[in-house]
Image 1 (tube, rainbow, N blue to C red):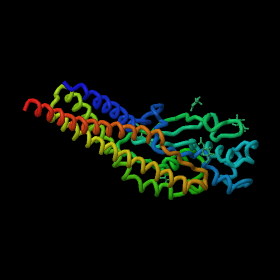
Image 2: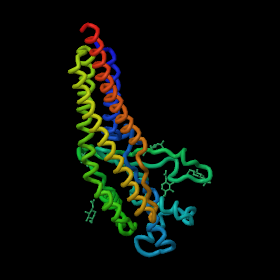
Image 3: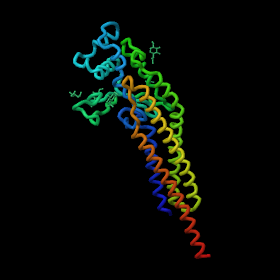
Length: 294
Ligand SMILES: *[C@@H]1O[C@H](CO)[C@@H](O)[C@H](O)[C@H]1NC(C)=O
Ligand SMILES: *[C@@H]1O[C@H](CO)[C@@H](O)[C@H](O)[C@H]1NC(C)=O
Ligand SMILES: *[C@@H]1O[C@H](CO)[C@@H](O)[C@H](O)[C@H]1NC(C)=O
Ligand SMILES: *[C@@H]1O[C@H](CO)[C@@H](O)[C@H](O)[C@H]1NC(C)=O
Ligand SMILES: *[C@@H]1O[C@H](CO)[C@@H](O)[C@H](O)[C@H]1NC(C)=O
């Protein structure tokens, strides 16, 4: 019996749950949607359109302008929000490993004198179907929304920068690799959990060695997956904020996602450390036993 092996078993079980949550967070509406990788705030997407057409009466853009209530026509931000609503564009689109979700900010899109930013919450309208190897394509999503809106406005009318999609597409391979690594990591962490349970009953050095090996592999898989997804989060948010700031588009980094994925990595690191210690102590124990009994 080696009761101490229960500790790595518990740590692996916790890491397994977290790795699962990384993969499945937001795979359907109301399931940890706020654990997204990136969230795109397009609630002010109409800004490019509104600024160019203030006061115009002619054409489609003029008639669109009529849809904006008089009371907010002076406020470019509010008017842009109203235009985006009329175009069928949601307030936010958020990317997960398996799908994307969309919805509205409540009670309002932006903080004001009486409404604090922390009081704004996300009301998820829906999510796309889950697919393996998913990658976020906001350009296509917005284009489809505009096509369905029945208003004759295109993405170029909204001054949507193509550079956003180009920047995101450059991250596609990294993101897909991260997805594959999460799947591998889940398998390895599960093995690590099983191996630790076996080691509770099989107190030999062999089981400790097997555990150390599986521990190292799981740590590498989850650590690499976390590093890749962190790169996607940082680079993706940079690209979107750089090219989107002119038209009121903003990206939020998935801080909560990063938190759970790095906690899972840390748990696997501690697991592997425990096995290193167990192997060293085990050898020492054996050494003293051999010295005493010669
Ligand atoms: C702030 O926004 C809330 C929600 O839309 C609204 O009820 C309130 O009147 C706004 N306050 C100001 C000062 O504009
Ligand atoms: C969304 O973006 C707009 C424009 O950049 C900003 O004013 C607003 O505060 C953002 N809303 C949230 C909830 O982050
Ligand atoms: C969320 O949106 C739905 C419809 O899209 C609405 O019925 C519901 O009241 C909203 N919830 C909140 C808290 O605003
Ligand atoms: C999503 O899945 C449902 C049923 O599984 C299907 O009816 C629907 O067409 C799918 N939607 C897309 C966009 O693929
Ligand atoms: C939107 O409509 C345009 C023109 O009809 C078409 O070229 C484009 O493929 C459509 N986009 C989507 C995502 O359906």
